[in-house]
Image (cartoon, rainbow, N blue to C red; front, top):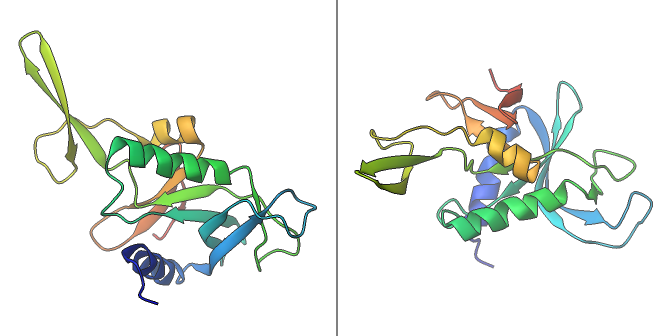
Length: 172
């Protein structure tokens, strides 16, 4: 079976994270902490920090297909639903709830505001555009959906897990 772009992205992210985390792919949830067979969801990755033993779930989407507002909401809503589930991971003897992060990060989308007299026209622009006003979306994503993000922290390939504008883990 041919791998989708999302499958390739999952492999790539899992490989990069494996330097710092033990990584488990495609982990199913169960109905509740005491259930053994009922499945409600499947998260793309479960990470166990090699230094702290902390668990994180990672929900991934094809970075080329998530930019519309509806798709962003669906992506965040799905990740948010996972924050309430217990996942049967090989890293714990009992099913575990865990903080959920998304990738790619949506907070790198910026808004550009143009003022045309009394008319206000907002356009979505990416961070690479030189003419934008930055609105910090980390706090919005956490407040509205209770999820964090994996973000790139510099041009050297370092990254961090961010929840509510706070780094909870960093590769540097």
